[in-house]
Length: 307
Length: 333
Image 1 (tube, rainbow over the protein chains, first blue to last red):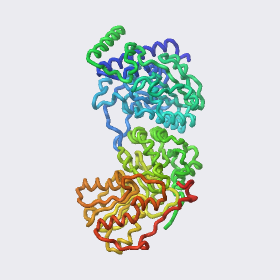
Image 2: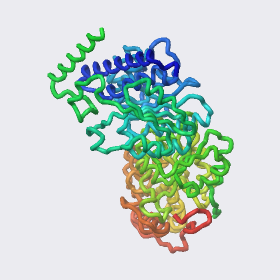
Image 3: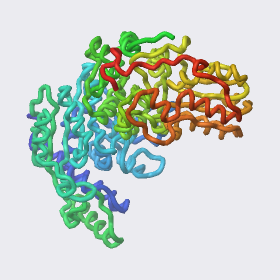
Image 4: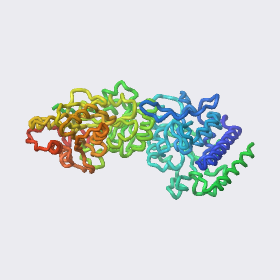
């Protein structure tokens, strides 16, 4: 654990702040966006990309590829893996299950020096790969997810392939709590545990929100951690936004079992003014130009403070 | 007629022997889908996934991304009805080599509407990157694994099991229909086990002086058959399609689309399951009841040529109907 100390945590918190600011900026510029997701997960993504996942160093920040067409008989698969492990032996894989968090991934890639800032010029633009809801061709994305519940199954298949080929490296999957309502998700947890896929690490952003509002009245999922344990996983539940706690949780021994880390987070962490939107956090949309202007002002002030 | 038992079970073990990248995934129907011998021979390449098809299909996508070729085994309905989104996003979109082996096509099971696959071609052929194959006899059951293996993307197979006749002595080929007879009056195009019914009419047409060109199709997607189109164009009475599938979106629809694109102004008669669900009963009963047997075909032919065909039951060729209870199947489904 020596590697993960107060200094490291400070670095992660700085990355997380940068992530939040970038997503905030794009939300204002694009007249809406998945901002709460950045608030709840920025520290998690920051910690994962700043050491918790074993990724090769990237000397010079990479640029996203232009759109290369959908996969087909005459067009091979193009993925955003070059921003992660690059498919290199011995490194970890990263499966981003809720593709709605794509902007958060792009932001963390920039903040950790893996993607060039100018790559965001292609964000949400026709003919680019930096899509609003990313897919496998988008930076940092390795599979097509976003039809919620499928990321974990694909990750399990990859984890099984690693076992069969005796490949080193863990399969990290980032998940949001809402998708854990789906049947397929529990089918996958059941199978990952049955097949003893202990090279699987799942980090779940438990921000308690989904499209219709707060999860509790839509479809409650508690006792969430107990569910995983009863399915045969090792599960650690921690307070979110604390990089050191996440590092410690990921060090939990889990021989023969997949490891699940639930991070209890807030959808307005770091941007407390968003609280007034409760219970609607899924997508920040501006009701009128005035509100957008207010947000812009907050953003400019926050930027000035950081200058 | 040569009748074979557990053709797929034996062939799968033999064929997969030197292919360590070939895996089998099963959803609690391992012996019912004749994957039991594979499981027992290569336990390290067999994965029991439980009654959880959505995970199984996306899991297969993950394995395929890492260089494996998963052959997913379960009843056809549980593949395309239960896991369609997973097939679309985790398998078909990335064009991954997942081979879906779907058992119990249409009338082959008395298991009722829950078990009878009647609209799989319609659904699977509409997915980009997907190939759809259908087997009609023991020979094609033996050939289809390798055929599917050589196609780089996802493949959906209508599979047969249990006791099967050997009708064909030449190998099944990708994108190549079998032309079983020449004729200028009428064209009949059939697929799967319906081809047996089609072949039963050979003597009747001959005795009545009707010249029929017969085709057996095993590649339902991609569908591009210029020779059959030429025959239809030059035929006197047009074409009849015969399929163990709803008439919407299956073989009949494929032919209709090709004819329209070619501008062929001939009559098309689609003999198939007429936009209804089936129910639990024996294969001969279902084929008669839902109008996809030899009699339905001959009645349609009479309509097409505008005259009554003279024949007795004795004029119809033999057909093999497997017993409902047989030691070639683990249950009577």
